[in-house]
Image (cartoon, rainbow, N blue to C red; front, side, top):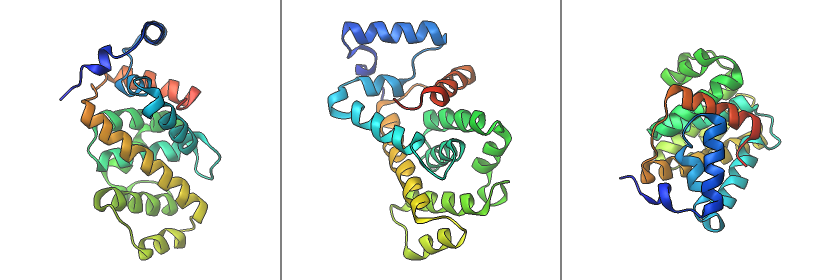
Length: 193
């Protein structure tokens, strides 16, 4: 069910900002952006800060790897808006959309490093089942991933597990391929601020 508040719950200054963004990008403003401006003191400001740090803060994971994690978690959650947004962003970040598509189609045969594969497998299990075991963590560590990388991957998972649920609860509208591509360019340039 789409909540009308995403279309009308803003003051004049925020509506003017949305108009400027729409004119500059030549695309409709995604509902994800609208959500963080709705009651920013309650959710938006904290969510932007946490997500930006998880996705663009210092990490041994590349921006492309973290965007792929976001796309993968979104796929496991079956969140169409977020799958589209982060598949496009990961594809642009890697400059290899086929690689991203291969991971989302079949993780086991995708052309990625074993450490990233083990990490995505662990994030998928956590997302599906809500828990992982010490054995799951040992598998990731044995693939050459550090404890810090695991923490960073878990932060990405947390950010997008939350965002996926909000996207579905608010009924985020899907974008065109051009809309996702435009949003990806902005995310790669500005991050999640």
